[in-house]
Image (cartoon, rainbow, N blue to C red; front, side):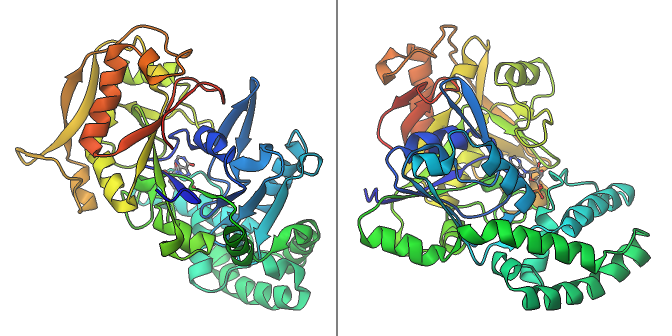
Length: 431
Ligand code: IMP
């Protein structure tokens, strides 16, 4: 297996515990690259009992001497980024961490957040149903990117281009704000002033991420691409329209991380030992009863970005098999296995019932998924605390069987198992 360039992605609806896996993998990586999404993500890393939540910064920021790249595929909220950098402890400069922000990353402007909120309210009011976005302006920012009216990081330090772009944008957006939404118009001076101030802050970090990654590879350095959200939230391959607006699958690393697909090595899919989802949309194994409550309580399933309680349910192997194929997953990182200790009767979904028939494949038609009923297999459960297990054989037999069952069903080996929230609460196999 080529382990020089690894890609890590979520296989479910985000919140699989990617932050802690990236943190473990960053130990062996020289460069950590975020390639999509923005401050909608919340990657939690616990080091020495201290909790760090990364929203835009790559989760490798706590390892001395690393280069962390914010790739062209991101949408950056500069205020959030500044806050995150300010809160870092230890400070990047004190441990030799270099942060590089791609010139081509897009900027989340205040009007993107405004449009995010207005569009959600309109969807709710007209009966289409809200998506349940994080309110971070992600969708509207990507819309502007693809409509070729986005502000890129490079524009923040080019006053004349910034001015021209902002004038075009205001001409387009103000009539929509005023006439469609009855909201106040945007003020050019205010936005220009803010963007210029952001430019001063961001300038020292700006650079060519493609060049940086390419020369790192040429000099034998190891690269880790850190995905955000998850396969089922991917704009193309997720449960559309209840998805985010970026490419969360492994292919997104090529586009948003500026590296040709042939240069990638191992693809690691992060799988939580059960499923959760925040926001609206189909979730076949959701448990609205006591089990769901227990999973939420045991797993502290509240959003790292929004604090919203997550919807919870059993592991969905139909969806996992789909994620394995869409991403080309070589290795599974299984997280939060400890949350299942003492959970009582344990189940996994191995098929969906649709129209009276069992289906082992994830339906290609998004609309069908709403009617999919999970077909469960009962699994033997265990009560022992597994948080101190550091070797696979330390796990109770039932937990080992659970892991083996996932491997067999997905035809992919589990390379790492998370048995607790801390950096050290990990069983490392081959990852
Ligand atoms: P947006 O990305 O804010 O536009 O939200 C679109 C959908 O993706 C909503 O259902 C959000 O709850 C969900 N979402 C976005 N980011 C994350 C994440 O990092 N974890 C889990 N769900 C997310």
